[in-house]
Image (tube, rainbow, N blue to C red; front, side):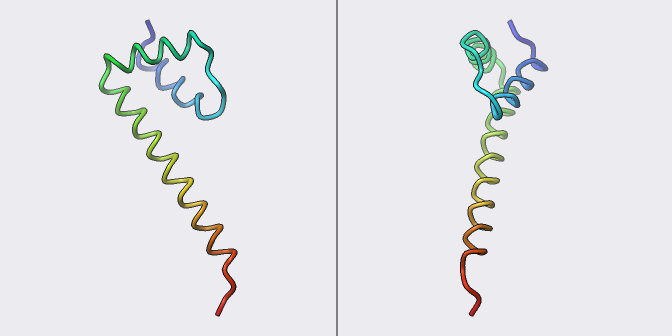
Length: 67
């Protein structure tokens, strides 16, 4: 079973690459029983969504002509 350090590393890596089947399964099992890692994963998801929304808003502001 993965420890919390390994899980947080995998959660971070999953943002940049596709995890293998055994990595995904081990991650899911650990997150089911560990509230700290579950919260970390939720925070990472929230940060990703916030960042995407910010970039989208910045792009839309750049596309608008000045009055």
